[in-house]
Image (tube, rainbow, N blue to C red):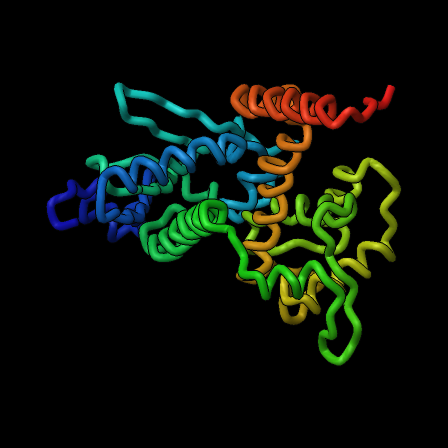
Length: 305
């Protein structure tokens, strides 16, 4: 600051005019170094495949911790830029963005680039830098938390049984969240949408998302009952002095585990005779079917019409 030219002379300052430095662009980053480049590449490639929808408005507002309305300026999108073998994922919000890429082939780097402090609800004067940095670090942390949970969402047998079967919680019988049940799958699917929101969700906001996934009438009393089940099972917790809920550590993993297992493994396998099942699986099914038919013929059992 001692070498920056002063825009006002002594007479101007004596007359009451003043000046201060302000912020135009601030970059706040977090870097995680892997023990081997192949592990970094594998982790990052999985992140790119799993998070192409991060630029949707409902995802962006959760990562940045800011509300997005119909009149909010900016284009909300995910842009994947490839430069040779390097890939950069950009998530845009107003004038700012989060970018994620591999640095020197072995470090995952997440940067929140704020081109206008007001995007994150901060003033431009330099004295507000700590507040802006704290909000940018929180955005980096939210993104990393979501992605880390998505890559390691397997749950223990004890936790799965406690969630998927009726249990005694807080001295009261608590209904099961049965894997495969349409209402349960819609519920955990909605939680996956709001998993990015460390700020949490309400009865009303979650109910709208569950109803959309169910495509049937989903009442307020049903939502209240489901929230009670989720809370007693230890998957959500209520934010003190508010009507807002947030996911617990177990809640994050159960929601993603249920959704990934059903949507990416079981549903394709159950429809293995046609896409989106892999060609190898469809071929294997035809081979098995042929062997079953031959076994039935050798046993001289009639095939059902």
